[in-house]
Image 1 (tube, rainbow, N blue to C red):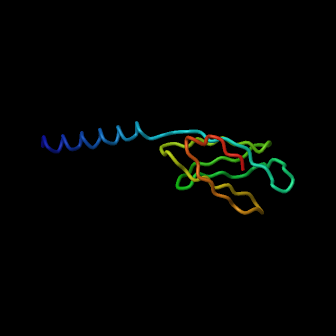
Image 2 (tube, helix red, strand yellow):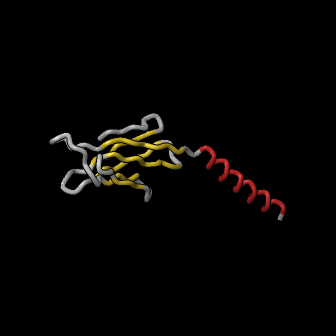
Image 3 (cartoon, rainbow, N blue to C red):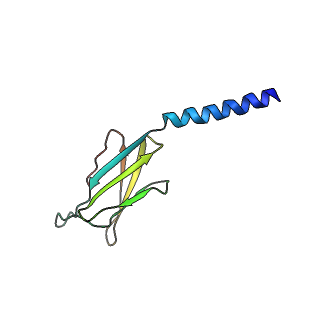
Length: 97
């Protein structure tokens, strides 16, 4: 019984320590049309492998919080246009597309 308690405590401690090292960062930017250099309203920006996502505002601006990873892939999609994927890290907090 004592050995099982020690193993359980060790597992809980490892999970908590791991969460301390998980990174969180914010990525912001502006999405513009390549054709006429106008901001795109309502572009969907999704973090791959999670339910995390945002859309651009009336000026094409976005700000997405990336939690628990040091690197993430963002997918930008807009009706009638081809989707784009970009990899971001804490070292690249600004990404204009």
